[in-house]
Every structure is written in C-alpha cells, then in structure tokens.
Length: 203
Picture 1 (cartoon, rainbow, N blue to C red):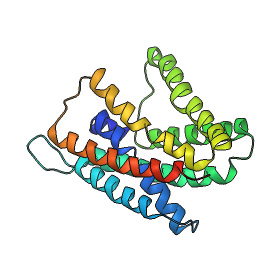
Picture 2: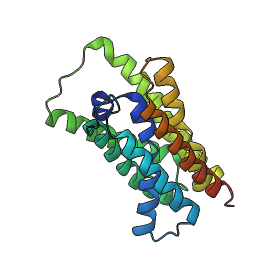
Picture 3: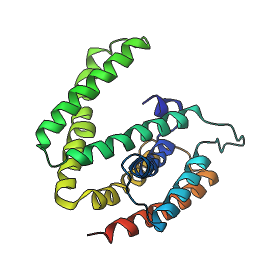
Picture 4: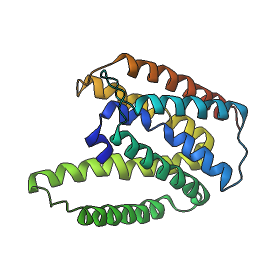
C-alpha cells in the first residue's frame, strides 16, 4: 500500500507480475523445483519490464522508491505462494481464516510501529468491504482454484490480473500513459505469454 501511495497504481499493477519471478526463483532455490527454458525467458523479460517501470519516465530516470516497495511485496507473495501450494489440499476455509487473522494482525502491528492513526469512522465500512473482496474472497477463490486446476494453471490465469489493474488505473483514475510505460507493458505481456504458454501445457 505504501508502494501504491508513493508511486502510481498503473506501475504497481504491472509490477505485480514480478510475483511470477519471485515464486519461480523461490521454488527453484528453496523447494528444488525445475524451471523450463520458457520460464527462464519469462523471468528475464518480466525482470526487464520491472526495471523499466522502477525508473521515472517523466523526463528523469530516477529510481522509484514506491516501485521498490511493490517489488518487496511481490517477493513476500512469492514465498506465500510456495507455502500455500504445499497446504492447498487442506480446508480452504481454515487456510483463509488463519491467513486473514495473521495478515490482519501483522498489518496492524506495522501500522502501530510506524505511527499510523485510526481512520475516521466513515472509512471503516468501505475498508471492510474492500478487504472482504480484495483479500478474503481473493484468497478463497485462489486456493480453491489451486485445488481444481492445479498450481500451474492457477498461476497462469492469475497473471492476467495485473493487466486488468493497469487498464482500470487509466480508465478510472485517469493516470498518464507514457512511452516508457508502453514499452514496459509490451515487454511484460511478452514475458507473461511465455509463462502462460509454459504452464498451460502442464497436466
């Protein structure tokens, strides 16, 4: 959330696909899973796109601290993906409940440490509704999809999400569309296509 606040939602959306890189590298080095040639190509392209997005395109090539925070978040998601995969055969309701309490408590602790103040009462209900949809329902459907489709196909379909987020950032928030962003978008689409092609062929 700090990354989105310091950067743009369009950049944060596309950088979200770095989760694929983080998930794959953690699976390779920690869980000793094999990585195909296509997936290595995807890692290279997505990383290149993430580097482009991490620098300002408004005339200055300065590094964006907001982008760094988003990339840090995707690294955490990559670890979470690998851990969730190993317990996805357990009760979806139990996993979502435990993860919800854990993430909520962790976020509250961080907010207290950095000195965040409680929001106005008018923001609490919208935040609860957003959390229910964006986190609770999202986690539930993702884990249920892993059980039904398998981890590979679920990840491939999930890779479309950042592009939806980027599209909405331009349509709803009217964020500027720069040449640098379009270049990064093209590279990211190519990398994501390699991921989808590699994972959907798996049984």
